[in-house]
Length: 348
Length: 244
Image 1: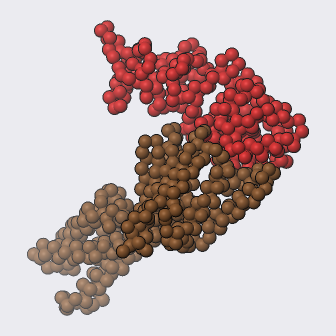
Image 2 (image 1 turned 60 degrees about the vertical axis):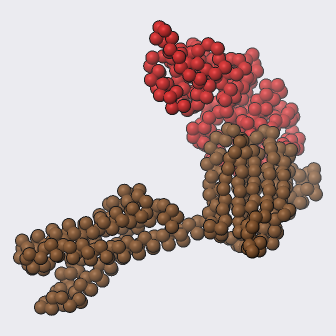
Image 3 (image 1 turned 90 degrees about the vertical axis):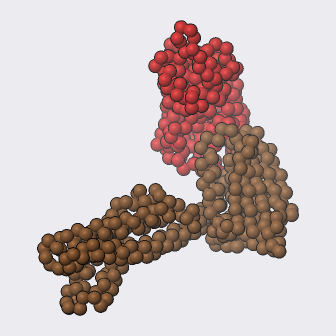
């Protein structure tokens, strides 16, 4: 749980919504303090006024301190940061209470606590702050986590839509078709059909469910277009016959990996190479590995590759949680991406 | 006008060839599949016009254009690209003509009409706009009217002599007319300066040795004679060698 949100666990205390939440909680605390049967000799409203001023002041003071400590807190792990923020708010409250008590004694207003009970007043304040800031921090922490998750999920969806087509691929395919029309009209026709299928899937409704069989067909169409474009430079070794074709799968989960393999592994090589796609059944899961040669001088290409892979990984996590995984192994001049997805039908 | 077609996709070459066949006064004299092959073909075939794809393996179109300038009679260049937002903006900014694929014959005719020779400086400007800090994959030397390309990964060391730099590489040595400091800047991290007049490929650096008279020499893998390290560059070099 802690690892899931390494960053941004602490809310922005300087932002208006958080500040408002803090003030509302502070006001509730003031109300509770006033309503609690302790000092019946004074009327309710003035007491509420005094308590409000005091508690709001404390709350805002804490918010400002936490806001200014945001950077060092963010650098700690979520657990340590949480503990530290909590201790910080207790300490700030205790210190503020001590100061207020001193001033109160000096002015002789008698608003805080009677003479000789300063210690009790400070400790009591600190204890209340400890309880309330623990609850509030926890609440804000959970809220921030929830927001982060919603953000991640929607980002995964947007990425999914955007990552589906490299503009390069579209225009190069159009160029291929334009060229084929003159000399090989039949192949041009088939390429248009393949391209249409790819775009139908890509432009289709978000992460609409498909099946593994459909995905493998799409991959095939895609490979056919690339084969035309790259000619002899691209050879393909396909071994996916054993995979269950009716396995439900979000669309375009595998095709981008193949596209990546060609884009980074084949295209930069003058003599091309082989993309190997192999699938096998495991107990309760399927595993698909895509291998491509890794060009030695891949200047800067790996970072873009990383973006695409992170995108697919996020989608797998979004759809399958921890039951799906994607791992990458660059070994000995080859680059291999392995995707493991749960298969409920063999899970017995 | 003699034209050379350069594209890594056979079908793209085929189409461009067919289109150029319909343009009067154009004769396609050859085709090449990489920037590297294009330079060889350009030396051999002496085209007046080169249609250059941008994304190609081994050497891309931008780098090829930069090397083409070293030819005795540099050809006019038109870039062709499928989709390259940054590059297109850079071309426009430098008034360099380009075509987007699939290419229209009218656009092709218009581009040929105003095709121009590119200066190396222009191409460098475009390169910087497209990808700041990019490096060439090859250095290019002119030897008796033809071009010699040396892969940067093959270079052992670079030695400045007068206004030339001698490129010592796996298969010999060639002269190029580029200042050593510019090379040092372009290939930071790949070459290290050991002397006012010498850059050594980091990957080829085999070690340092001290002679009895107190001078320090750098040994380079595959090179018999060690190179002297200047006093000024020694501390930095020591540190580097230790970190290797």
